[in-house]
Each structure stands twice: as C-alpha cells, then as structure tokens.
Length: 482
Length: 84
Image 1 (cartoon, rainbow over the protein chains, first blue to last red):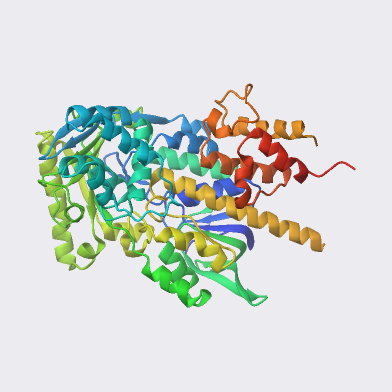
Image 2 (tube, rainbow over the protein chains, first blue to last red):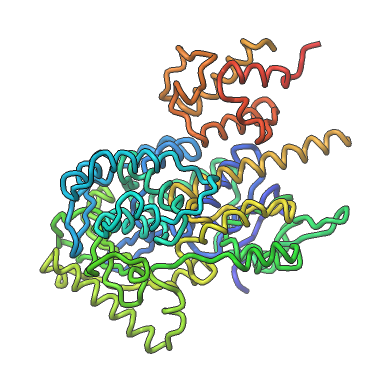
C-alpha cells in the first residue's frame, strides 16, 4: 500500500492552507501565531512554491526564483518570520545591463539610477526627480487607467533606451508589460529603487528550511505530497459556506480554507463554478493569467571557478525593447543570475541560472520531439550568450538542464503554467472571494503588485488578518450563544 | 482604563513592530507616520495586535482613527472593558 502522507492528522482544523508558496507559508505562520490550528498542504515534495530549489548529482544546488527582492523584505521577514532569517538578507550590488542600446553597472537604487539617467542618458535632473517622486506617491487603489508605456512616453518621450532601462528588469521581476497599468510598474520599481536589490545569503534551500522549522515551532501541521482535490461547501441559512477539503482522497474539515493556489485554479477547479454567482464565475474566467518563464540551469564542475561578472546580468541582443519580443519563443533577452560561493557560505561552488520570459502556449503546443529539441536549443543559446562574458565557461559546465512553462505547470499546478500570477484584474477577484463564498480566502500572485518575494509575503499577511478577524468574530458569536 | 494607559498599550505594540524606532519622544498629536518609519503593513500589524492582545476589533473603515497616539487613545479607550 502507498505511504499515507496524511497519517496522524486530525479530522478538523481552524484553517487549511492549500499550497506553500511564500503567501501560503506566511499566512500559515501568522495565523498559527494568532493561536489558530493550521494545516498546510503542499502537493510537491518540497515547500516554497516558486521560491524553491533543486539539487543535482555533483553537488549542484539550483535556486528557482530570480534571487533579487527589495529591502522591504528585511522588515517583513523580521515581523512575520524571525530576526534570524531577516539577518541573512544581504545586498546584491552588481546589477548589469548589456544590450545594443547601452551597457551599465548599477546598484539599482534611486541615487545611482538618477546619476546614470542624468550623466549617461542626458535626461534633465528635474525630470528624473519628478518621475521618482510621482512613482512613490502611487497607490494600488488609485483609479488610474494609464499604462506603463503611456507613462514612459509622458516623462521620457522618444527615449526607447530609457524605457528599456526602466522596464526590462521589472518585466523579469513581475512579468509586467508596457500595456499593463502603470501602477504595476510603479510600486515594484519604487520598492527596488528605495535601497537596491537584496537576496538571502545561504540560498532558497536554507531559507525555506528555516521557514519550515519556524512553522513547526509555531504549531503548524505541515504535510507535503498532498494534493487538494476539492474544496467542500455546505448550505447554511440559504448560503454556501466552506466546510473542508478533500485531500489525497480524505476529507478534512475546517472553518476556513486559505488557498495559495492560483486564483483561477481556486475558483474554477478547487471550489467549482456551482459555488459562485454566474457573474463572479464570468469575472474569474475573464482574468488573464500572466506570462511565464523558462530557465536554464548551469552547474559548474567542482574545483572550477568563474570570474565575477555581476550578480544579476540583464542581457539582450534585441535592437530595442519590446514586451512582445521579450516573451517570444526565440527571444535573445536573458537574465543571468550568478551564484558565487559566497551565496552559500562554506560552499566553493558556482552555478548560473538563466531566466527567460516565455509564453505557455508556445511551449504547450509542441510535439514531444519538438519540445526536447527546443529545450536543447534554449540551453545551447544560453551557453553561447554566456560565452560573450566568460569565454571559457562551456568547458567548466558539468550539469545543464532547462525548465519551461510546462515545468512550472507541473510543479506549481498554476493555471496555464504562469510564473507571474495574474494581470491586474485578478486582484479584485481574489479580494472579493470571501464575500462570494464565506470561509474561502485567497493569497497568491494576483494583479502583478501582489507578486514577487515581497508582494506575496505581504499579501499573505493581509489575508491572514482578514481570516483572524472572521475567526475571532466566530468565537465571540459562539461564546454569546453558550 | 485611562487614555494614558491606552497610549502605553499602543506604544508597547509599536515597540514590538518597529524595535529600531525611538519611541521615547513621540508627540501624541502628530501623525505616527510623520515621526516614525511606519508603512501600511505596520498599521495592519497594530490592528492584528489589538485583536490578539486586547480582543479589540478595528474595522477597516476606522483605520484612519489610528493616525496619531492621541487619536488612538480617543478611539480605543472606550473599547476596553470598563472596570466596574
């Protein structure tokens, strides 16, 4: 008989969390610290969602998510996790851009960007200052229909090069394009510009293991290899309410489900259309999922070293930036995440993770033979591109492997294999969910701004607050009856 | 519960949320955001802590009442159970 991954769990929890991305992990941790009984279920054998890692023969460790986030992470991690984890956050100072329009090294903060824009790009200092100040004043609830592209045209008319400098890194960070609302660019860009780019020293493996230990210490029951098949509901007083889940074929009762699954998966697959009004179902179906990513993982043979060429290197051979070109199957735009031994203190190993934005449909429609060929092409082109900066790198590579939007779909179960959640309209559906079906909450990558390392952690906390509020009201009501 | 007791409880919460801030010289009438490095997530944390520590619920529409120490005391003091 197969191993029972749910062995020993109880029949009832206050909250069942579906999925262990950073939103699910953080929501679970905050709710447990509020005194609730929490069960967290992850279908994969590893926690973290896209904030995860894998190992390969030869001692290679590969981190999945682009290893850069804004300084705000230090505060969020300290408040919602621990001082110890927050202490491992360090700045990545070597951000580079190399493309036909410009080649620059930057610390990716407001001060340095202002200097580069004024000195190198010859933009008037007053314009740069106004741009940064206006961006900082943006709020996600502002009802502004301007797109990022239109906003750039307003501040930097006719400046393709400036547009590229501003847009390209954010497109890798949150999958947003020039056609998305300006707010999706503004909030994320401002967060980075505040103090630059940061990462966890020790790597994603250390981070997620520390988070797992913290969850355990706070009393969260964590189970991996468990697929939630269905969210259960019941009609009470003429309304449907969440009553539990079916996971690995077993019924688990709970007051609240916090879904860290993709919002479309949550509504249309896990809960099912019959639990919602036709209008809400239509609204959910209309939510556009964001684009996805490919990655190429290059493991350097033990004993070999690489020169320091920067930490995050944004490269492209495209003459101009275009959001369409960036996600094209044959794009030449790639970001190299360079992992030197100091990423994982005590290690003497080097790895390179190449991130390439991509469209799910381009990869999903390939025949098995064609899919394999395309993956090989991706690897070859990435190595060739890296040779421009490290000419002898090919001979040092011991392990090479590629992931595509299909890989992301397999390991995260995200709708259409998205690596960046949904477009802006997904935020409203996510926030309206508990009013539609009492007991069901969602914290995951939505609306672009609730994405990425920091956005998803903070969104987990925002939703945990709503759940804690609902459960506290429930307890008061029960006490009043008794 | 006096208003001064209430201010003290709010300062206790803020000192846990923002341990690096010097809270000894807070001016009660000035907005907290204008004298401390507090963002919207910090205010959410204050709301959660009020619920956790004191069983007080602050509805979203009333978040603005938490702007300064003085307005906190004004708004929160009546919400504490009164001694009989």
